[in-house]
Length: 54
Image 1 (tube, rainbow, N blue to C red):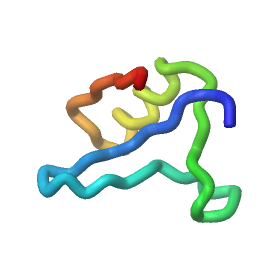
Image 2: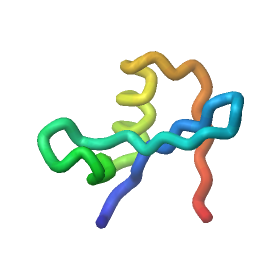
Image 3: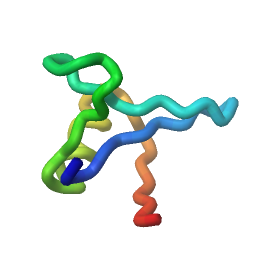
Image 4: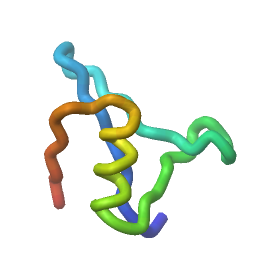
């Protein structure tokens, strides 16, 4: 997979990967740029976003 994915972590340390609505539900949504990933996360309601390149 090429691109960036959005992974949300709750205060209880549960992790959720943003998936595509058009593909299988287990397929992570890949974004071409960090800007588009951040904009999409903001659109669905996230207030704080951090980037991890590991």
